[in-house]
Length: 321
Image 1: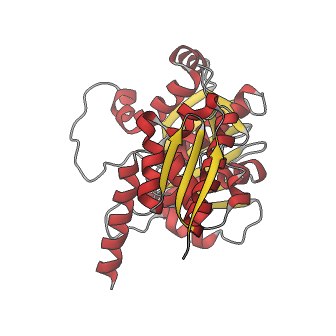
Image 2: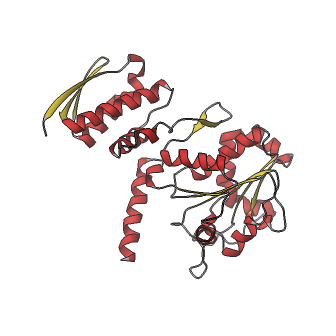
Image 3: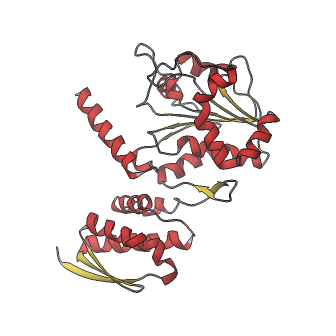
């Protein structure tokens, strides 16, 4: 391939965000695409093979677009933008960082950061029940809870119910002191933490006292009809078949349900089938139920999390073969 040069101009007000601290984003692109950048004030010269230079220029242009929208650009966003444009999915990339789901109590916008997350949010808007399945760090629970808070703030529902099965993650916790609530709180702590961040602890506590927000183990759902509520079932891979069926048949009128889980992290005894895994097979053709499958490309935690997910996938595939 021929070596070419391409010149670009980045508005000075966006340079810090697009280039990154100590030009870390530029260094990342140089290493991954095997191109070289020469930066002079707000002007960039990109040198390398034709296709790679064109791709590098498209990435810079897209990052400038994000910066113009007020987005905070980090290495995860740079990597994701690069991977997406490599796959020629630019049109889908337009939906990323699009609509704001809701604001945290500090005014920080909560948005989708990947194509998978954007489609997940759309699925929740359009369906009564949505299954969000994917590895750790894909935002499946956090975005579901943000959608719940948004519906609550808009008075679309009157109550938020967050639940998960109380099962130990491969370790025996033994006797826990205190009343029943203090015994189950450790299982529910991740849900509390997310709500604190979105709503603020004071607002959360006030609505908890009024009974408008409920965080409870899955066993507490038995015998109830859950109407006019936004219900999130987290860690659903640890439900049994009976628990999943019990939960799904609790749903009343004007309710929305999001069920999240990671089928690579099932903590049930080996002889028990995951209720989530079975539900995905049984309910695949039922209208009104949506399915979102997030993957390693949707991981928005530390870049190492994506590598860990990949490493375990490779290991599991080797075991199966």
